[in-house]
Structures are given as C-alpha cells and as structure tokens.
Image (tube, rainbow, N blue to C red):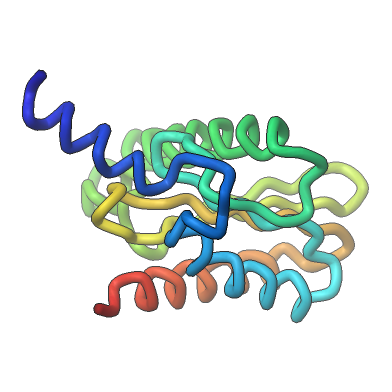
Length: 161
C-alpha cells in the first residue's frame, strides 16, 4: 500500500466512530458547538465534518444517518463554492478560492427564514474540517459571524499543544 494512502487512512481513523467518549476531535469540538447553539437564539443544529465529508460530531439533528448525509453534502457544497469562486475571480489567492482560506464562508438562504452557513476549520491532521450552522429566524449576517468566529476559535484551540 502506498504511503500517502496509509497516511490518509490513519488520519481518518482519528475521526471515525460513534463513541464520542473516545473521539478526541468530537470531544474537543462539542463544547464549542453547544455554546454557539445556546448563545444564539435560532441556531438549532451544528455539524462538524471533515473536508472530504466524514461526519465528526453534531448536535440538533434527528439521527446519525442525517448527520452523515449532511456532512457529505456540506463537504461537496463547500468544495463546489470554492471552485465557482476560482472561475468568477481567477485573480484571488488560489488557496482561498478553493475554499482553503480561513475566511471562506458558504451561506444558503432557504424559505421560511432558514439559513445555513459553512465555515472552514483548519486542522492539518485531517486536512480541514467543515463547520455547518443551521438557524431559523436569525439574520444571515449573525449566522455567518458566529460560524466564522467559532470556526477560527475551534481551529486555534485544536492547534494548541
């Protein structure tokens, strides 16, 4: 087996599984996610997944299958938005245009005043993570702000040794 494939498998073993008591990444992220959900009225779910769509942890969703589906879709949506940004403005920093920039945010406004915001959480051991915030009856800017600041804080905290 090639070394790069072994490295890829090894880093994903750190985030797979449903026993959050033994998942260090989920244990580290859940307090941040819970705090955000309780500080901002209207945020009803928060999901954290890897950049390639593996579910890490979530709060506020119906079941584990929904969380896995949402994580996969978030990864695709985040990557697609980055590719579109690169086409629309090729002069942008290539890392930022691919959704790799720390400040990259994808937001979706849905009917009935529902909003989704996706933000990158830099975490080199797994590439990067995608934080998704789901809210109702909250201004889009508020959700984007909380997604961005929470993603940055979580990235900095995970980076500490």
